[in-house]
Image (cartoon, rainbow, N blue to C red):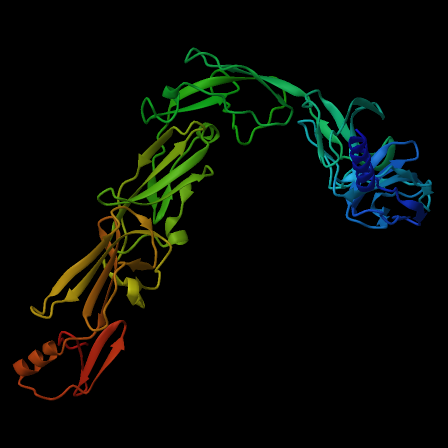
Length: 517
């Protein structure tokens, strides 16, 4: 028994030696810095850190800080002029992270005149959301106010649940009137920062009623603020995207007869309004050529009922080559001046059409127009191999238009001396004209290649280019000489416009022995 009691006493003594942590001493303020001393530990423990808690004079906790072992801490970022604070400090030791008793500091009043700083970037939107700029770990109280006469009246007040929050949401604001938000950053109940949002004007709201005029069931009525745009109501599928035919357009009008179409992207709501459904056959636009300018006719009612115009250009065989959609309603389009679209000797037609707000589209086609002049194939300028490792061929882009491209890569057959087609790239439909083509195969400098590229407008060949690359076979030059009975030697070879050329007796030949003019 005596041994057991002795063992328990030793354990108690050991535990006391380990877990007893003396509290900091000489706690005092040095301006905005709290200072203290740590007594020497009398056992094998070591100090692990300090815990600090800052309070307002009224006892509201405003900050809790854990920090590594120190004997001072600068609280200036937490302080505001003219306010009084105090702090509690305790130390903890390892092992065990056992804290000492808390030591309360004297009160400290920050020098300066008590003031309230500006809380930055306070904003209010009509969804009732109040926001502000970053201010650190301060709770914020926001008050929604409405102007009654010349006075501001509080409607609702809310406080953040987290000091890092930068917004508070109230209910959406739907009642007409002038509103603002007052946001206050708090230390306890002390307001240290205040900000006021810009005034938010909520206009009077009106009701919009839709009358489908027996075409289908009336869409549900809606409300919207004064001066706002009306949301396009849903209609059955057969009245949109041309599910019925390609001759009708749909629109809403402020009168039952359809004489005053409502422009959903432009008209603003100014009163309670009823809109009437209109499903009409689109009047002919009568597209005609005025020189190279596309022209058509539109009634004022059709201009108002339509959302946008669509103008497309075609070749003689009705191949689409260029279009202009999604643009404002007009009665002409000058493609040639803007894009240099038309080429001599070719024939073109165009279609002029409109889309309504449900994307029903109606179009009318013109007669053919023949461009003056003789049809000619234009050369691709500065055609050259841009990268041999992928057989990339480039040229000067003629104009920013869409073309169909057909490019062929040929390799000289050393046995037959014929050109073998080893790769073809063809864009079957119009594509934005790039100034290159890439066959994605390597070109060997010791072989000989011929590359032909053509750009088409529909069936019309507009641009064509040809180049040669690699080592020209000597056999073709020798054959030419033997047939001509001329044994004179080659003077030198050179590269021009992507072709290997041969100069001999003052004349220039290509690699096939054809004299160049």
